[in-house]
Amino acid sequence: MNKPFEKVTAFITQERNGVKMLLVFKHPTAGIQIPAGSVEVDEDIETAAIRETYEETGLQDVKIEKYLGCFENELEQHQRILTNTTKVYIKPDLAAVPYKDKLTRGLTVDYHSIQEDFTHISSIEYVYDKYFKPTHINHNITGWVLNENLSAQKKRHFFHLSTQEKTEDAWELKSDLEHIFRSYWTPLSPKPKIISPQDKWLDFVYEKLLT
Image (tube, one colour):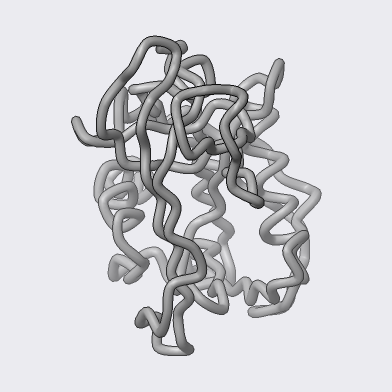
């Protein structure tokens, strides 16, 4: 298996009217989140944190205040993460028929078994309603991918960022997938409610953010 696949999460704060605020955004199908994403090939983790902040919130004037630590591995024993966008084959053979759609780099999949150069995996993608409950399955793929495109370790780095950029209390941004993200400032205390498993990320760094 490959080396750990690295992810970053950006906790962005700003003093607003004497109150320490945290920036979150509402994803139209996945709920309230913190800016986060994958480290690109040959990209350092600090650059990745700033880039993900811009891509998911539009903020450009940010600086890293502190590295808050990491989760060494977020994957369960039955999970793997794709290190490259890859074809999925119906059999463990490059000459076999692949699925029409590729699975994208950074996607977590379920692991079943290994056969020589291939790993048997499955991936289910749900579509959610406005209440973030699944309404139907967008894809359900089970097949074989090359071992070189998988890692058994997903390492997540946490950063505290700040910004002096003047913003509204809330604003909208169109993502590269045409989703509309609604960013907004929320008081850091009491602890904001965000989706799982990101709530565990916030628990991990919360005391450091308060101080």
